[in-house]
Image (cartoon, rainbow, N blue to C red; front, side, top):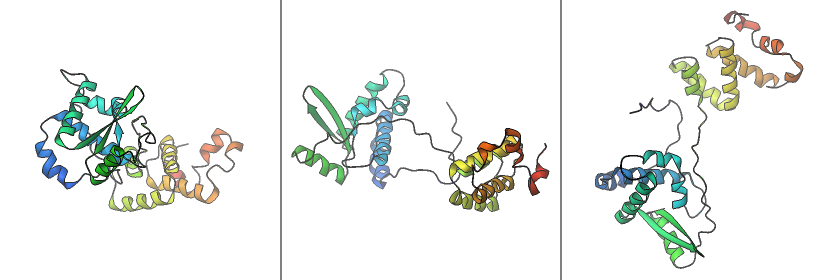
Length: 235
């Protein structure tokens, strides 16, 4: 079993779940695959934009994250996925619509919410077509580490005072600036937030890339080791 390092500090993205999921659905679901598929579809639908919000079987079958969680003895992941969808539809968690275009058949799944029920009813009455809802791949989204994670990974523990400074920096500077400033600090073997902050302040005052193309590597390196922070660096 792989260990989980825990949720990072600072802002993290989240997926809301209705309270009824915990009081009515969760106690009733006795199949792990059904539970995983149900939760994954909550996550997918929350990330979608546009109308109607639904997910296709084709999209689910191409979702590497979902299929990895359905591996196990017995059935193949795709087969476990189909069985889990059947159970979720039979339970009433999901609504299933089949759209036929010529010889092609597309299976679509909606969450059994008020919006989902109204969309399905419009489809059945011919008032809404699914051609406009494009099934896209569900790649693993690699989130950029936030400033708190970067600090903990590269500098050390976060004190309350540092936490306030990090919040201010996150609101003031672009994320890529913060990442690059920390990388520069590590290259100079400096693990102090004051030094990272001095780089950010210099970029904000002088322009991040001003004159960069005219400087040589050694001059560019020494640009960050002048002034009151020079004592922290060996050169």
